[in-house]
Length: 353
Image 1 (cartoon, helix red, strand yellow):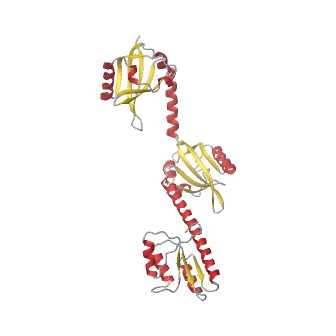
Image 2 (spheres, rainbow, N blue to C red; image 1 turned 90 degrees about the vertical axis):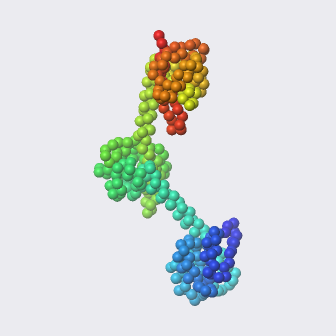
């Protein structure tokens, strides 16, 4: 059914209706007379219900069959149509009812699918998801991600405000005020960075996104919070590493390996760039790492030590600058692997005096 057209499959024997439905064809609606051979319309509706078939059902009844219409509605029929009167008017009512019932059914199905997707996302997400009253922060529902992250059970929080003294989840209440202000003005809030208090007293940074939803005609907050404590700690370590890397007077470098053999240069500090005559990191980045080795024998020894020990300790080596100068020094490095499986060699080079 669509674009103003109706395609019908007609069953003269109501016992064949199930065969039509179970054949795999998709039907938008079932329209049934009440009086039919072998069984009546109510019996057919009961069979459809017993087989858990969720297709809207309309029944035709005679002028004096109000009790049939009532029984049909009680059994789950979406509508009934009385026979009789002007044929044109009756068929007009039939077509109008079909479109009305089918469109309503499609809306209900779309809502059901949407609600099911939300339910799955709510209950299976590893992030913290909760629903709170916008007015006072009272918890209406929380998911398993919330309980695992915070340590609070549902019983601990449902019916209580996130600002209540026995929960005190917001380390800084001003963050909650900021969230509420954004929700009141924009209807949503994205990536609010705030610190939250866990049940065991730990304070963790989280990134919250939230939107306003309506439940029982009252505004509520649907929020998703991802704990980013590890990310922030990693960023802090990286900043300290970069700061240390640039402050030392010896060379620090990183190269990608191919089967334990140097492949490409991907990082270096200022001391390395200066000693090896590179103007900036982009000039060094991506060059063939083998080109900085003066001789093949030392390159092979370097590769073998990496493969056997996953490290190289104070190996005397000759490396070549961009301008072709040979620089003698000691190299120490370790091997690491990225999440994508790339092997990296990170090390230091100290020029011999």
